[in-house]
Length: 155
Image (cartoon, rainbow, N blue to C red):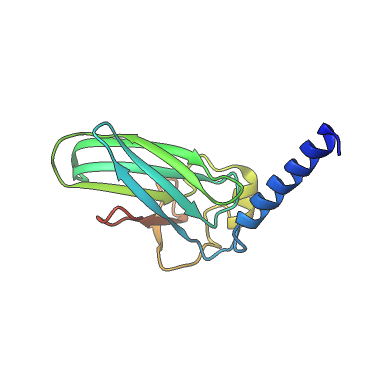
């Protein structure tokens, strides 16, 4: 076996390992989003997992204070990977106040056309216990959001 054969065999094994790690429910309309949250002095880091289609945009938010009078707000968005995983880093506020950390999947802006076609232009095909509807600012269309949070480091 020469060096090229060894490299090709190694690449094949790596591809099999990646395939083995893929969820069998990727793209299911009954959406699952979960993961682990780690808080450091400077950041809140979310190692997430989902069954969302690769390329879906997921949103992370930190809120401190009442939603009408926030002392701190930070948000970002990241792309879901082939295996459904995502990684979010948010700046930490260090205010020593109760904090809400949210991870959301919604259609108010930045989803690619393939994601919109799959889940519906306003997410109307989404299902599951964490889906809720709200009236969007753009008329009377209904949007479904996924939101998950808890205080135990898991989302």
